[in-house]
Image 1 (spheres, rainbow over the protein chains, first blue to last red):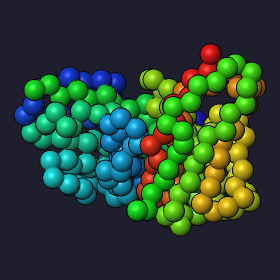
Image 2 (spheres, chains in turn yellow, brown; image 1 turned 135 degrees about the vertical axis):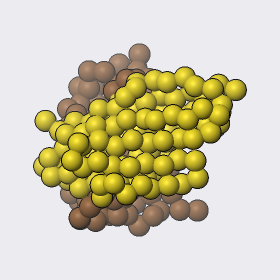
Image 3 (tube, chains in turn yellow, orange; image 1 turned 90 degrees about the horizontal axis):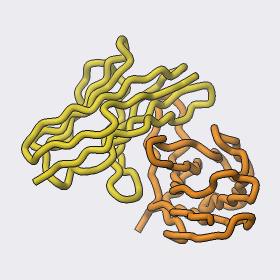
Length: 111
Length: 115
């Protein structure tokens, strides 16, 4: 069965800290891995990763994929209270080519 | 403004009633999706449609029905057969791309409470 597992389930840090969120996957016919940020309602797209070892970066956020070990990490440096959200990881693939979501990591950044 | 709209934002129903959640997009996307989100369970796929007049069951389709009569619209009906309908429902759309994958754009969601 295809699955995506995220860890930790929740995390509390202080402003300025650096955090690393983990995502491991077992997805047949794996094509790509996507990260989303969900604050109150609609998840918003962060990154799509298709190749191993190539870091994608956007401001203080960065992500990398390891297709040999079947995991991805999302790094956030110099965290701010506005980074508080649920971070969702999803693998694209499976028998019918769809997104398989993990349960998410709830990040709380305290001032 | 391009995007996905869902209505209503909050919906309350009595047990035993069917209820229809609206999802409209003006992104000219071919594919549309319905997810359910419960605390601690991430997003689970209910139904998806890659083309007008065609749709497929996702992982948790029981107790739900959909239609796709227009490209822009993909309404979801939560029937009385759904055992635990109280949840946050998210609609998404994407271009129909094969290959390495695609970004899905999400609507703001509808929070359904059934008592």
